Structures are given as C-alpha cells and as structure tokens.
Image (cartoon, rainbow, N blue to C red; front, side, top):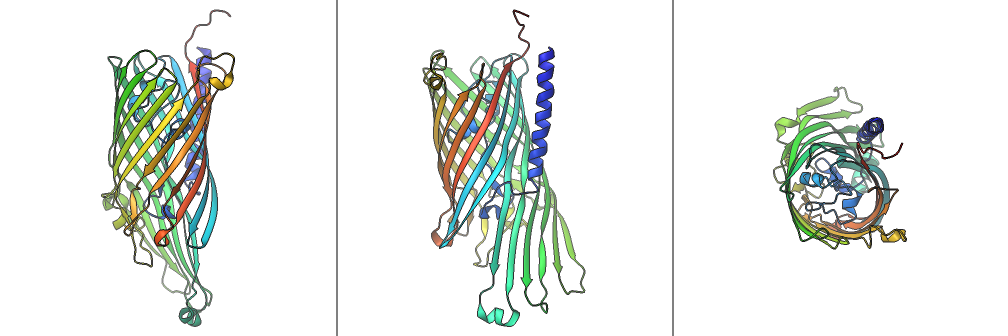
Length: 438
C-alpha cells in the first residue's frame, strides 16, 4: 500500500509537470510550417511513439503492453491490476523548398503524457494531455518593384505567428463477453494563438502599420470507440475497430488590433466572440482491422475520414488567409490511410536481448484538411521504430523515426521534407501485489 501511494504521488507530480510544460509551449513555436498560418494551425499527429512507429495506426490495436488512446475502447487491453504510464517527446527537422529558395528548421516538443488505471474487472480509465495543433511561421518580404520603392523607399512586410491548441482528455471503457469493448472520451481543448502582420516603411514620411490577431480559444468535444476481437488461440486474433470524433465548437475571444505610426488616430482594437462565429473542429470517422499471428506478428490497416468543410476557418477573420495571388485557403474533407507491422522474435528469450525487442514499420498517406486555391496539400511518409524492454513487467523505451513530405514545389507551392524522431517511455507496474518475502 505504501509503495502504491508513492507511485501515485510521483505520477501526480509528473502529470502536473507535463501539463505545465505543454501549456508553456502555447506561447512559442510548438511547430513550424508555413501552412500553419491557416485556421488553428497544423494538426499534430496523434498517438504515442508506439503508434507512430507503425504509421500512426491504433483504431484496432489491442496490446496490453502499451497505452493506445487512439481508440477509447482499446484502454481495456491491459492487466486488471496494472498501472500504466506513457511519456513521450519528439524532435522534428524540416527542410523547406519553394522554387530556388530553401530553408531549414528544428523543433523539440513534448508529445504526450498519459496515465491508465483499471477500474473494476474488465473496465479501465485513462487520462492524458497531448498537443492538438500548432501555429509557427515567420515570413518577411522586401518590396522590389522600382515604381513603388522609387516613391516610398524600401518597404518591409513582416508576418509571423505562434501558439498552439492542447488537448486534455479523460476516457473510460469496458469489455463485455471477453470480446466486445466500448469506450468514450471527453476532450477539452485550450490554447493561445497570435498572428501578426506588419508593413514597415523606411521613410519616416510614410506611416508604418502594425496589426494582428490575439486569440484565446477553448472547446469541449468527445470521441467514441468500439472494438471486437476474435481469438483463434492464445497467440493469434483478428480485431475490428471503429471510432467517431464529434464536431467541436470553439469558443473564446479573437482580438483584432491595428496601429499606425505618425497617426493622430488611436489604436484600433476589435474583440469578437469566437463561439458566435461558428468556428468548429471537424468530426472524424475511423475504421481499422488488425491481425495478430503466433504472438510474433501484428499487422494493422486504418482508414480515417474527417470533414472540415463546416469549420468556419475560411470565412472568419484571423482564421482565414488570402494571398496576393488572390488564392485562399479553404477547408475540405480529408482522407487518410495508415498501415503498420510489428515483429517480436521471442518475448520470453532469456539469452538474447535483441530477440525480445519489438521491431516496427509503417506508412501513411493523408490528403489534408485544407487546400490552397485549387491545390491539395497532401502528406505521406514512412515510419520505423523499436521498443527496448526495460527491467521487468512490460516496461519499455520506444524509439522511432518518421520520414515524410508535405506539399509540393509545383505551382510555386512550398514542400516540407521532414525527419522526426519520436521517443517515449512506457511504465508498467502491478498494484497491490503482496510480496512472498519481506
């Protein structure tokens, strides 16, 4: 009992630390992408390092060694007395190219902090915090047209943004007849996003302008999931899973401000109620099929459909974006396919450590939830990873890489080529186990 209380205290400490760290990121670049200028930024791929090393699958995954929060029903795949915790980080290196211009960027982020505990027999509870989306960009452009700068002098256009949306969730699930699992999740989104646009004249005779949007957002949503597992024997099974995420209305304030130098007019500030603007996060339907063979092989294929056409991003100031080429970002319905495979040579091998390691690979393709004018912004990639067993029980350290690209250089668009390293520590312990010896 004393040992369990100590674990609980440490868990609470790390949970609060993780929450504060993730919250602090909302004031800095939690991601870096020119495409994050639209809406509430670029969505972060969900899942722990376990999921990400298999292409992001998880809708049909049932594995009692790891926390899988992508399907609320999956958290019942566990030992009935087990305490489980997963803490993950990621480091992303991006290479941007547009025409003959290139640039690079590196970002380090906390990825997730999740705790899962049993409730009663075949039911379980999970609570966690994870980034949902991030805004991070910094553009600058100097006017080059002679007919303009000959009259006004040099003009420097600056545009930058930062911030993030973070998701806190609580999910509960139960398994019936040892095969059918159902789960539900409550999500709370919150964050602070700032987008700034400046126009600075070199000559003091012209008024430089400074403006932007300061958004404080929050929303409450939910997700439902189910899984059905058919066992062929103790080592082989076939699992079908499905999830549905509700549309989530976003509330809060969107403050638009404007300031011009050398002006007798006071600063202009306009605050809008985001909730009354009809801004929403899109809903999502997912289905998956997973096959386990001989306790060594696991293969899964997932499909997700998400409808963002009613998000309101393209029609509300601060969220919408239209460029000088008269091309605007527009929300669309997205489709994603993910596939992954895991291989463990022999989990119980006592001679060779490498035979107890879990090896994974995966791939994914996503059409994206918006387009730029008539051009889609798709992403695709390959993932690889391995889990190193640590000490006893199911403790392990997972390390993986995600190599992919987003966008294209055609039609003067920007292509992101990225290399992401994902790492997480999954802690597994048994509560209330009475020792045989003191």
